[in-house]
Image (cartoon, rainbow, N blue to C red):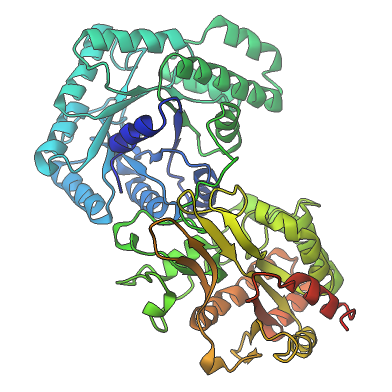
Length: 599
């Protein structure tokens, strides 16, 4: 993983007029909360923050969770991670262990802080054998690890809440810079002048002008939360903000909308004033932070920015990984967890690892789901009979009746699904419950906002692909329709929960088939997404187990629970590839087949 300071310098060099943003999160206290945050991270990291950072619990109360989230973000989100590290209740030895673990994982960005007192302690006290302040922590990291770590520190434009001597507090910041810090992030503020004056002041005290002090913006999410936070931090709130909030304080929606408006206004002034980027305290919430950076124009959706069709990993031992099976397209986190123990990763073609030994699918079950998510699932997934089950899939594709997720699809269908939506709806209505698909693409430019990936000036291709559950009778229609005599370029593989396999090709001869590939200047052809029989058999265990998520969301004693059990135990999971990427018409042909219109 690169150092954040190096990323900043490279960004400024290549994008002289462009600004960036970063997001901050805190570690939830429950396992369900951590899983919810990981899902949110997947979505928020898709708009390419320059980095994210995760706070460290007071007294180490959530330190293991912080490490878990940081490592997971590195592995699954392909984003640079800045991990908070505090002096609270820690010793030189305990911090050395943490930093060695970070180094082993390739995590090289640290925000060095003194930290808050533990909850049961009124005043902060240094631990015996530990550190007195953040300057000592910075010195320790530099002495023990040289320049391996990129070190950020905190800046307090209004002074630290525990220090009434503003001059002394400012000198403490200068000391942190002189101890070896690479950049700083400010505490929240709501008066831009306070921040700008602070930057000028520390520069007058010897801090280099090119030393980055990033403004920390905390969007107002609720009136009560805003009031408590600003009172606790002794934050100055301009009268105009108080006046704007006063009449809407009991309207949560209006307060949040004003918070976005204010965040955009403050950030725009700061960016126009010369700040290269802004840091947003998300409070683990998505809407406000995403809205602010989009309204600022910091997210460019007009061209592709993906290195691969799937989200890559920043973990050192996965750096050469450049191909994955398509089956985990919407469950990349699960794929990474199931391949975490691999010593080597496929490079070029998946055949470089024969019959990979996937780890077991770690199914958390209903007990690992938060109460809020349980209620959401109960509301989204209620249905009546087979037709109602199909309709739930259709509602998901249409974005109707509040069906936002399915067990195999934790997020709404992506933009790429738009061109297939009507055809997929037709399949679902016919009893072919689709969970994964991609359209045929014959030579899109690599910067295409819908299908593009990889370096600029390249050309990318896709074979039409669809994956679905269907009944044995439904599979018979597929088998009778997609014969090798009539459709020699179409291959299907079907498997039941008990492992019964059916295909229109000899299973022993099934090749590893690239379903996306790209041609780029000065490089060999890249084939990052494949269909592979052994991987499909590993995926089928996970795919069938996920029906249990739906089963648990149904009321006890409901007859539709038994229908779900029957679907899980007797239906087939099927994937179909049309190798004719020039003029194949997989979805039209299949639609006619399953509705009896095929000739």
